[in-house]
Amino acid sequence: MRSAVVAGDALYYRYPGSVAADDVLHGASLAVAAGEIVLVRGHSGSGKTTLLSVLAGLLSPARGTVTVTGTDLGALDRGARARLRLAKVGFVFQRFQLIAALRARENVELVLRAGGVAPRDARRRSLETLDALGLGAKAERYPRELSGGEQQRVAIARALAKCPAVIFADEPTSSLDSSSGAEATALLCALARGNGAAVVIASHDERIAPFVDRIVSVADGRCG
Ligand SMILES: Nc1ncnc2c1ncn2[C@@H]1O[C@H](COP(=O)(O)OP(=O)(O)O)[C@@H](O)[C@H]1O
Ligand SMILES: [Mg+2]
Image 1 (spheres, rainbow, N blue to C red):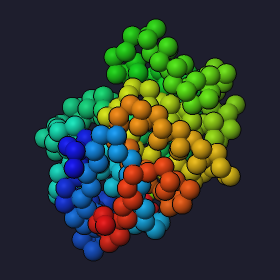
Image 2: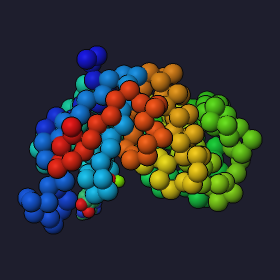
Image 3: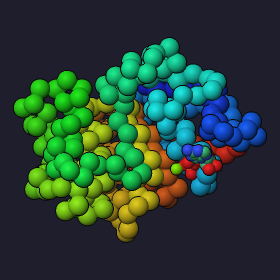
């Protein structure tokens, strides 16, 4: 396999306050190469969100290692891990988590600015990315003025705009009706592929399968 952009090896994770029998991840391993799109499937509660969160450095595993573009996240302190995430990792959250008080364009700009992009460049890149997702005409709207599918595309634009090495998308179609979620996910895959990013999507939506290179199942805390 080409060298992995993100690699989790023998990961164990247990939520605080639970016991060993409740290990959510129990020796899970997954490596994803540049330009590769992987779909993570598994029943509700199987640990998909937990796996993505650990691979993205949002949760720290009890055991096992995660490397992102070759850097071992376990060797970094919180601040360094946050900076690495900002530079290398895009995350599309299940409920989008847009900032209600900011326009679509500003939601995307905020992440770019935090990563050190100059204001004018951040605005240009934000508008370009929203345009690529078909939202050029709605860039000045607030999240509440957008449909669910449009909010999802803003969340995707926010994750994509910084051209991260790896993008995670957690159940991107679950809070949307009809085909808008699958369409937006197809766009995410096409744009990420163009950038050579690694993509990890957690979903049980069969409509996503045609867009991906590989399907992995999570069960009993492991990836199969
Ligand atoms: N914050 C939390 N605290 C305690 N247990 C949690 C927490 N989040 C998830 N869990 C538990 O961890 C397991 C895996 O959850 P999750 O990773 O969200 O699964 P999935 O995304 O596949 O539905 C479930 O049993 C769930 O109840
Ligand atoms: Mg989940």
